[in-house]
Amino acid sequence: MSHHHRSQEAVRPLLARPLAGLAGLGIVVSAWMTVLHYSGPGAAFCPQGSGCSQVDASPYSTLLGIPVSLLGLMGYGLILLLVLWPGFSQTRRLALHLTVVAGFSFTLYLVYLQWWVIKAFCPYCVVSTVVISAILGVVLKSKVTLPGTPPGRLGVLSLGLAVVVVLGASLAPTSFSSPVQQGPDVADFPAALAKHLRHSGVVMYGAYWCPHCRDQKEWFGEAFEYISYVECDPRGKGGNPTLCQEKGISGYPTWEIGEKFYEGAYPLQVLAVLSGYRP
Image 1 (cartoon, rainbow, N blue to C red):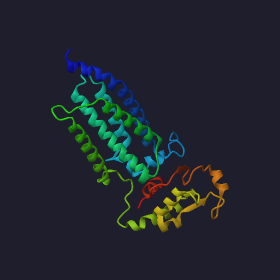
Image 2: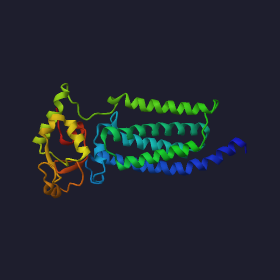
Image 3: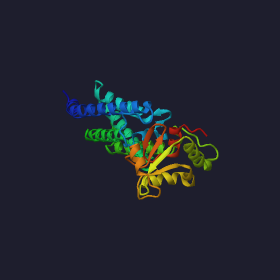
Image 4: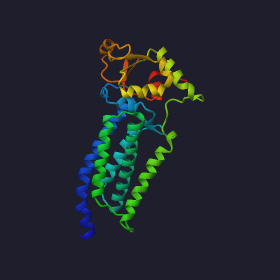
C-alpha cells in the first residue's frame, strides 16, 4: 500500500463519520423547514413567538422561485453524497470543501437578512447555521490541497468563492421572489396597505416601550394612523391589557390576521401577503 493511499485512508474516518452525521442532521432540519414553508404561515408546528413564521413569510424565503430551505436540503444532500460515495479521492475532497464553503457563505448572508432586514430568527435556521458551521470546521481539519498548485491557492479560491456567493446574493435582490409588487406609485403603498388592513379587521397589539413596535410604526410612517392598534401596557396611552390577555398576547408586536396570530415586526410586503392585499 502506497504512502499516498495510506494517508487517504487515515483521513477518511475523520471526515466520513462526523460529516455524514452532520449532513444527515442538516437534511432533517432542511426537510422540516421545507414542510413548514409549504404548510403556509402560522403552521401549528412553528413555535409560538419564535420568528419562524416571520422568516418564512418574508420575500427572502425563496430564491428564483425555489424555497431556500429546499436549496439547503439539496446542499446537505450533495455533501452527504460526496462523503459516502465510494472512491474518496483528493478531487472529491476538494469538491466537498468548495461545496461547504459556498453553503456556509450563503448561510451567513441569510443570517444577515434575519438580523438586519427581517428582524427575526427562526430556530430551525439557527440549527442549520450551527450544522453548516460544524461541517466547515470538520472539512477545514481535513487539510485539503489543490492538486498541482501551491497550498495557499486553495485559501484564495475559497475566499473568492465566498465573495462571489455573498455579492451575487446581495447585488441581485430581484433574484429573491417578492410576493407583492408595490406598483409604480411606491409612496402610496404604506397608506393603501394600512387602509386594507383596517378594513380587513387586522389588529396590531403592542406596547409603547417595545423597540420592534417602534420599527413597525416607522415602516408605515404616517400611514400607521390607519392601523387598528391596541396598547397592551396599562401605562401606555389608551392601554387595554384586559383585551391583550383575552387574546393571549405574549410578545410585541403581535398581528391578528383572520383567526391567526403572528408575532414580530413584519415588513410591509409580508403583511400584504398575510392579509391577502392586492394593489
